[in-house]
Amino acid sequence: MQTPAEKRLAAFEAMLAAVLENYRLTTEKMRQLKAAGREKSATYRQLMGNRLQYQSVLSLYQVYGLTGPAPADEKSPPAGGQ
Image (tube, rainbow, N blue to C red; front, side):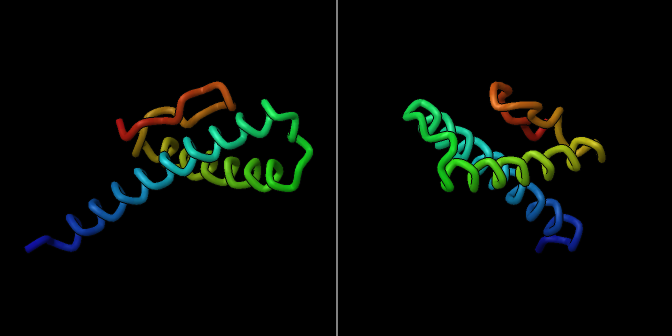
């Protein structure tokens, strides 16, 4: 049986994995739209907002020492659970 702390840690690890994957997928979709010349589309702008949200969460994790550095820009790889 897991302790409450172990359950919280498992939930955090699952959330971190989901945020990292969503950041990666969002960045890839944005690259595809940019390659198609659709940087001004509503879809691209929504993805940009989503990406900034994921980046913000990853930055908070980093501030509290829970991960490595957060992604700085579109060309940076996402932070790992280090």
